[in-house]
Amino acid sequence: MLLYRRKLDREEIRPIHLTGSAVPLCSAQFEWLFNTSRVPGQHSDTLQHLKDSKHIAVYHRGRYFKVWLYHSGRLLKPCEIQLQVQKILDDPSLPQAGEEKLAALTAGDRVPWAKARSSFFTQGRNKLSLEAIEKAAFFVTLDDTEQGFRKEDPVASLDNYAKSLLHGKCYDRWFDKSLSFIIFKNGKVGLNAEHSWADAPIIGHLWEYVLATDQFQLGYTEEGHCKGEPNPRIPPPQRLQWEIGEPCQEVIRQSLSVAQQLADDVDFHSFPFDNFGKGLIKRCRTSPDAFVQMALQLAHYWDKGKFCLTYEASMTRLFREGRTETVRSCTSQSTEFVLSMMDSTQTSEQKLKFFKIAAEKHQSMYRHAMTGAGIDRHLFCLYVVSKYLGVDSPFLKEVLSEPWKLSTSQTPHQQVDLLDLNRFPEYVSSGGGFGPVADDGYGVSYIMVGENLINFHISSKFSSPETDSHRFGKHFRQAMLDILTLFNLDKRPSK
Image 1 (cartoon, rainbow, N blue to C red):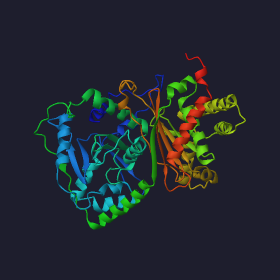
Image 2: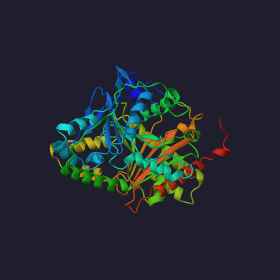
Image 3: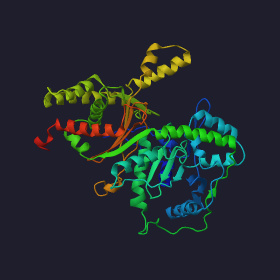
Image 4: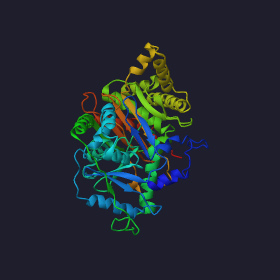
């Protein structure tokens, strides 16, 4: 992570280009990756970004530590970072009063956190310790649980892994930091990213570099230690000191209660779809993303027996400081296709025809969204202006009040040259996920890895009688297979 930050500071990371072209995408979001924290305010939050940071903040067993990243003017070597982490693991000290669950403040409602920050963290030890966290390069959690894929329990193990990275115990991640780097007891790792400063492709780009560099450039000894000889004279990690009285502890308890209610309600299902991937979909001469989106529409209809307003994120980084635009995947063409799949009187040829029309419409809308011709950001802009001018708009109220009951996003696989997935399949990333946007809806994230694998994350809420993430996952698998059969690929000569 620190080597990536150094490349970023030296402007050595090549701009990402639009696939198959010389057109660069805006790189503005990369600036916020490190040394960034979201600061709570009573009316609105602000982003605090530093040009540089020479330390990280580390959380372990309820204690906070400050770890310096440089010694004698140079970045610590991996073996020296390992030594510093080992000192934290060996530290027998107990958490101070109120320290263990302090980060729950960043997980609950924003106004209580903003008030607590201005009341209890503006002077003395608390101010210095909070600054050490907020001004860190990033936040690190040494998690005391074991996570990761287990062959003996593949479904629950991946679900728990993803759920832990999403929210943990609600007090062992500093959710305001741009990045919380989570290292589990058994050596598995992951990231929790704050969303206001950037979108998934930025974090994905960093993560691809981390996965490839850690193993294939830095590597480990046969015993599992970092290579090299550490300098034993490097100062040890510094324990952060707090004075957290009962009034502040009460705010922490309330924030934790709010956060745990939210977290306990998240029904998260993460799974690999390995029946086929974008390689086979491209043989169908259709867009892989459109294929997946049509499968999601079919799966949702099977799941709920109705259609819903659907959100798919499209990047707008062809424009300066561009973020996202919405592709409204549920169209009259997609509904026609789904209904044809439900109709036993329709032939495969007819269903395929409806699919191709729907997929082409989806691709057209995606291109429009990318090039500034979408509608949702314009509607939002009109809404902001109407608020500023004090103009009441029944149209905007109506349009913007409808919930996105199916919210979807594809994480791009960007640096395909970093890692040969055919030779090293165990180093594949499962991508990332997010919680549901609507109380009775689904959040779906997916990443197409290589030619033969698509990793999925499906979230919903246990409290909704309408949703079930595992049920939706089964519907989606079947929808993908059913759509593929329409193409009759086994009867076609392959080029």
